[in-house]
Image (cartoon, rainbow, N blue to C red):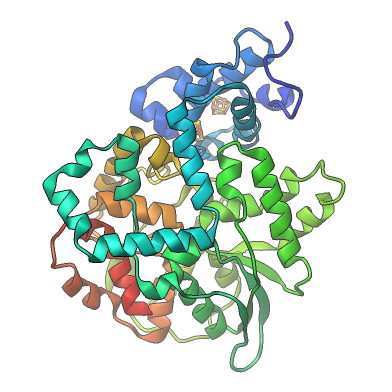
Length: 454
Ligand code: SF4
Ligand code: SF4
């Protein structure tokens, strides 16, 4: 029977046939862990792709349901002994679903809202300004205490609950230009500023620049737009590839050793540009050259012997592996090694570290129930380590974990390195800030720490 997939980049049969159905991936798959359904496991999803390739099942709502539920966390890639490239398979399937399966009106509107705001920093700044007013005016407190928010649909509740704390300084900070280190330049790097990152996590970018300068790097932050990671992960292929091409154009004339990224989700897509644009005659080589230069900030720092003295941070810090760093880029050792350069910092390993926290790009907004179950499970595992603080290299994970982990401050690892170099005592300053118990406390713990580091 003819394939149910259309002819544009269907899942490759030679990749599908790599799966020997052994089931080693099942314990690491969050959706299989939640529901125990074979069709919500990597093996089951590969079986569905095989059936669709053979034309035995259609690409319809029921097919889409199992792939929409997949977080794209790539834990199955890490755990598969046969080297099944599920990452390539899911990225081939998602655009097929977007083309073949009509979404409901509510679904279209919600996804349209996300994709008309998140990839645009200028629009995000407007939204952030509204969020700032919402937070400082007391309206948020009022809506939480009155119970009004519980009347909203689950997706809107999730969107509201994940709203990061906003500062005016972050909304209006700019991230362009060239910064040179004092003394010898050991490396020349270009920085990916990110979309959500530059508006809601501006202090992470500032910390990144400070640390790179302290370690002897010249840092160039060019004018840039969204890298397309959110679009690629959601199957919005044309949109994602158009953004990838623009990103390449923004960076390709820079004479730099590395293109540095401090967002795990963006980093994994930036490293894939070569593969994503392999069939584009104008961009194939340029994309491969771009991807070859992309490094997570932890990779760059792990390769550079530290030159800036570190001050002690006497704290038990739980490290959460962001999926797009650990599984998507196989980066586990470097962030741990870099954090261990901080004297007196005790690094803690979280049980079930391979399991996604439920953030996964837009997953916790479009699949809020599963996102909540995974968020609570991650928070319980983190609490098991009795940490003074939590650190992870992805802003989506920071927000997701902060939502479910009350009273424990969160940081991006680069903020801890920055604080250690500058001798800032983040934990002491934060503990006093955490005393004001209100509906924003769980969301604002991370920002309170970052505010100290600014
Ligand atoms: S994806 Fe890999 S681990 Fe999972 S069933 Fe197939 S071969 Fe086994
Ligand atoms: S990407 Fe994650 S959620 Fe999807 S099948 Fe693999 S392990 Fe499961």
